[in-house]
Amino acid sequence: VAAVPRRPAMAPPGSAAAGGTAVTRKIRAQYHWRCRAVGSSPKSYGAVLEPDPVLPLSLVVDDRIRQALPWFGKASYVALLSGFMMTDILLLRCLLAAGYAGLTGYHLFQLRPMRIPLVGSLLFCLVNTGMACLVFHERYFLLSSDEELIFAEHFESTMSVRDFKTLMALGEIVHAHDPHALVKKGEVADLVLILEGNAEVRFDRAHTANIERGGLAGEIGFIAGSPASAAVMATSGSRYIVWPRDGLQKVLAKEPTLKKSLELIIGRELMRKLARNTWVDEALRKELSPLQRARRFGWFQRATDTAGVSRSRSFSCVALIGE
Image 1 (cartoon, rainbow, N blue to C red):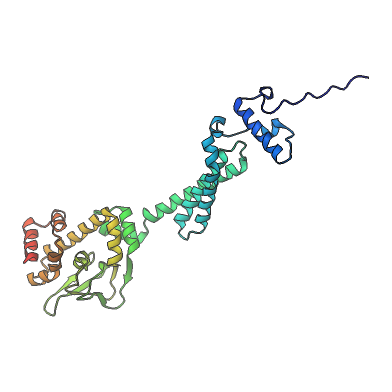
Image 2 (cartoon, rainbow, N blue to C red):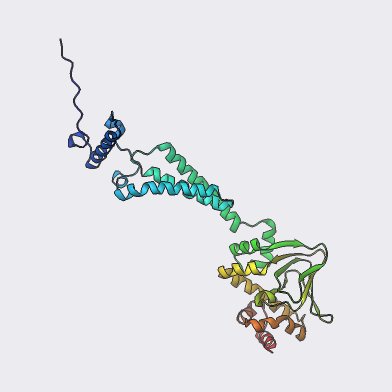
């Protein structure tokens, strides 16, 4: 009777006879010890214990990476959980993209990564990253048809699109169906830009002036922070943008480019009013006197050349304020 050949004994997992590199033998030995600790025994080292990483094995088995990997996975799930709690769509997309990017890295550094979760996490990361970029572009760079007209007419020469979007987010467009006060005399005024129609400035019964389309109201009080020296009334059918002073000042403190652009626009407006000689000296002194207390003459003179007003007229205005 022919003897049945015996199956050759499997070499110990930690020995050189088991085959593979030193790193592979070390991984097999560790896994074999873990199986013994839980009372089980691996059946096939070739199928179960053999590492199959996506990245180089020497990188995957680095001790520092192995220690940080569990925390990296936990942080990724925290980012996903935070993202689902966000009400702002841009923050939601950013946190989801970060969370799925972390999960992609977590799967990449596994000894035997699961391909389907790896590819799925990568696809979710790419989709959310693309949507975040789209939302960011729409929010800060893409203008609506109404915003395009306002930007081209009033802000294009002095302000970037990003700063303009920031400015518009703080303001409110209002349609005046009936005459009403834009600026109240004796109160700190908000900044107002007339888009359509006009507004009437009332210094007193004897002195009045008109603010036409594209003009500003409350600019002096906005800069100086002092009560308005005149009342401004919106006419029926006019349209304007109003920016609350306190909210806009807080943003300007964090956005130096926006602040510089807005100050240039205000300076141009003052120069334009001076060039048209619509104000008599007494009315001009009443309107500009807060600047003397605020000591803000530098930007006022810098806007002279841009507005096309002579230096002598600008200096005479500053001298008038200082009287």
